[in-house]
Length: 34
Image (cartoon, rainbow, N blue to C red):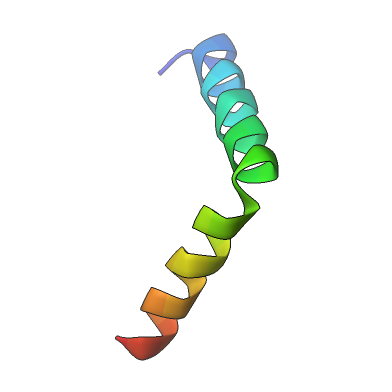
């Protein structure tokens, strides 16, 4: 994977996590339960 592609994907993921805080919290709860 190219470094630029990885950087873009990481940036998009960071924006999604920052915007969808509830989704990130729910994923954390699921990982704790399992």
